[in-house]
Each structure stands twice: as C-alpha cells, then as structure tokens.
Length: 103
Image 1 (cartoon, rainbow, N blue to C red):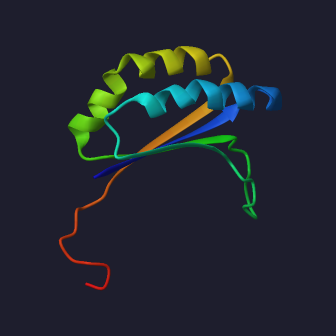
Image 2 (image 1 turned 90 degrees about the vertical axis):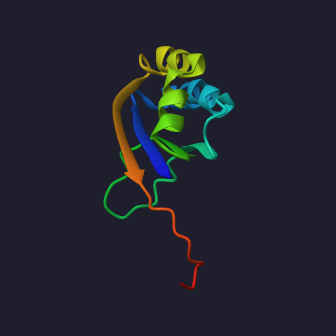
Image 3 (image 1 turned 120 degrees about the vertical axis):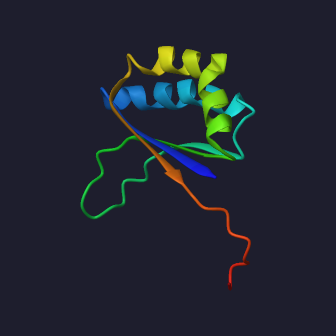
C-alpha cells in the first residue's frame, strides 16, 4: 500500500476554501482505497503553517499512477495551482502485513 500525503499553503487565508473545493475533485477519482481533503486543525505546538492536507491510500504504484493520470487530477491542479503558495508531497510505502494487530 502507498500512503500519498500532500500539504498545501494558501497564498492568502481567503483562498483556503477554494483550494479545498478544487481538491475535492480528487475524491471522485476511483483509484484510491481511502481519500480525504482536510483543513489543518492548527493545534501543533511548533508549526501550523500548512493550510490544507490531502491524504490518500493506494493499493500500489499502478493505482497511484492511474489516479494522477485521471482528468480530475489535471483539473484540480489547474484550479488550485494559482491559489496555493507551497506544496509538499510524500509517498510512503507501507508493507502489507499478514499478521493481525496483535502479531
């Protein structure tokens, strides 16, 4: 499984809603197992610069690649890019365990 996490900062606070709306197009893409777009709750003690978080889980690299190739991905990018300042992305490969939660 791959966890796909993308963090955005808005160019200004009044752009955050529009960023969330543009990114909501990604939820309509059928290749993820789990997908969320959320505002940052800003409760960290040390840093609260991030405005919006995208979190998705994908079965494998092929599913993530198909997600990125979907037309909604290009449309979301077109809508959000002019509104955002920074974008940070991380993809984490999580080994699939055959053991239960207690091992």
